[in-house]
Image (tube, rainbow, N blue to C red; front, side, top):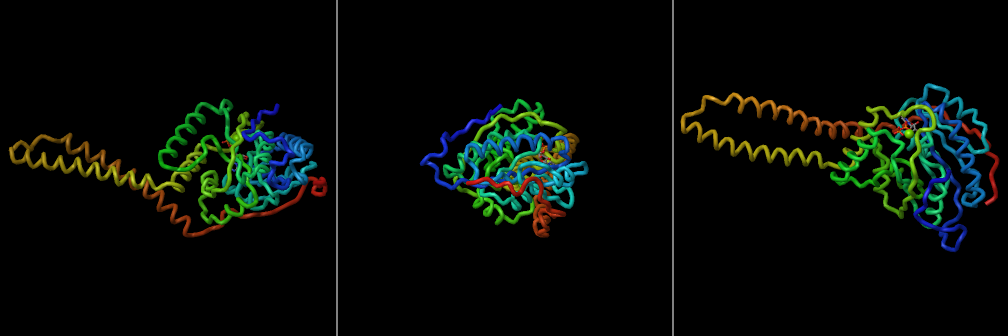
Length: 340
Ligand code: UDP
Ligand code: MG
């Protein structure tokens, strides 16, 4: 069952450990996850037991479930959760998006280390064991990286591969095949809070933090229940966020393209003058219409790219809150702390 591989191989407890045994929080954004929650609770309970047995956590695990505007039974299930885990439920006032929900959870988590994962168990909870070991060795951020993407659809795999390649070309610093399954220390979360942008692309922001980092690889499983909550529109929107939040290269590309077109046009005008001087200037419908319509399209694209950035500035200047909390509840067994 356990499929995590740990890149740091420490047997704990050892003298190599640099840190005190932490309290663990797990943050899970949930949008209409009523079908996945029972399996999630069960897996996290088992993980909690395993971590306690291995003496890798100092207290009962806190699970921070952020309800991101669900309209199924998700919130009801969070409120009434009967589990030995310590549950903290954060209900957002509406659907604010995965990244915002995750950020809200990170801010409300009380642990010394906070692991973020999806509700659908695509992120292997067993990998958390490796993450905590890496933390104990000194890492402040531990990235969960997918060793395989077999469980994803062909489309998701191809689009992800192309996307990461484009981002790399644009100079965006990302860990390939790492989404939002990662461990962060309290210190790194405090640093993350100092970033005030409202356009959130957390996997990119986290790379800006610095600190000691490590990587744990895991096999990505299929969704345990329900359907993907990432519509194509949400995927494209997140994708654009990643580009425009971390790179202005698209703007520079427009400038370079403009120069290239200007150079060609200059040569073309020299030729036109020459043709005029020779007196054969009547034909040329194609050579007028073609560049005109082509350049019309290019202009619109260029304006659109600029518009993306301007829109972004517009959103940032308003400094609206990144999420609005409707309600916070405690559930599960908050009392059952174990001995350190
Ligand atoms: N999610 C969310 N708000 C949204 C969309 C998704 O909180 O608007 C959550 C969702 O409940 C899940 C995680 O984000 O826990 C990842 O979504 P999903 O598994 O549907 O995406 P996929 O794995 O298909 O990319
Ligand atoms: Mg998923």
